[in-house]
Image 1 (cartoon, chains in turn orange, blue):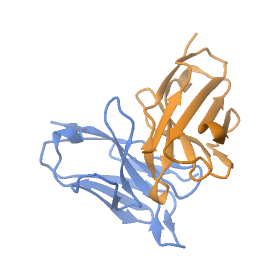
Image 2: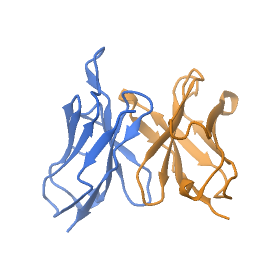
Image 3: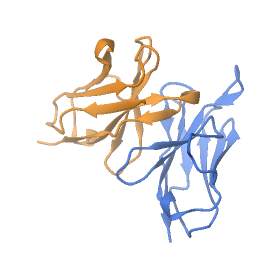
Length: 117
Length: 113
């Protein structure tokens, strides 16, 4: 079955770089796109970016200058890197996979990232 | 970017009541090539990841109870819960998947009396 699992450091210091990994199973990264969505604590959902099945990427324009998404298909992993973190980047980060009509049918459990000194 | 206006921000209802919530897009989400709308609804319960309820504006995802109905086309969409149950206490989000960057509504918080 389709599974996505996020991993990364729970705590990042202000101005540092966040590195997260999404490890997938049950499907191929060359057949489906994987997306990153985040949710600041107590707030709504924000679409961050996408790793397309063919290796192309798209980013939220508000985050584009700080964000990079890459992948290792041999390890079934998609990576998110975001620099210059600030306290308002604190929240839960999810990776997802689309289903029909590009809706996010599959989600990881999410990983909580706290930005604090 | 496509803007999504979701309303109301919160709803307080009694079990068994009918509930409707709205999602309005700043541009049409109807893809002319296949005549399909690219609008999804999600339910997020406290401490959980969002779960897909409706895709393509009106199609229930696998396992979603039939008390949840999505409707609308173009720029105006509605999620209806025909008879609210206690387990429906959650935040509800709509999302456009018509064009990048995908965008979410701000959410509707459903609370029970």
